[in-house]
Image (cartoon, rainbow, N blue to C red; front, side, top):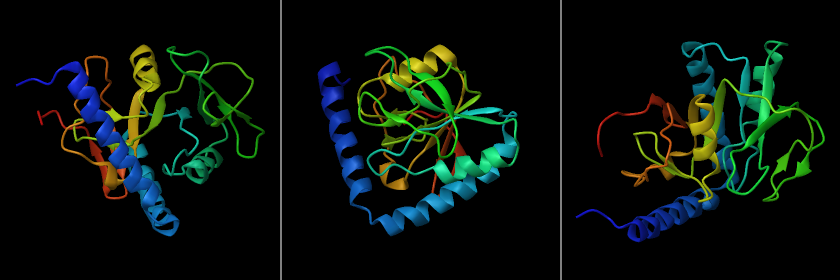
Length: 198
């Protein structure tokens, strides 16, 4: 029997809450070990993807993997590279991306997350998307605002979901508007999304 929209939302909310609690309860030292493994897997993955000149990532929020040091090394390896952070410009609108450099001053955005206050909007080749709960088909549960789904559907960049194995679930119960990511990277490794049904 198919889930109603309300039932799916209730179950998705419970999956999100469980994944967030598991991530936030993990000791910081253990998360640092996981983050180091994620960085190695990203290093191994990127040479196998189409060339990336503009990469977007997210400022770590609620114990998400902290990719700032890795992005800084990626930038330092080639001076022409550009990194960007997402900016909420309006409720229920796609995100904008603005250039980020290590050490630059940032402002608190709509949800208190640091982001560049000014600068032209840029279009990333690759977006590193944070994962709360996620399944092998590349569907994820964010925080429920739909910002990334709207943004990725509009831009169609290459996407790599980045998160911890504690958020892996059998089925993210995707809705028609949900956007499947191309790759998934956790401390356990990197994998292209599965095309199989759950």
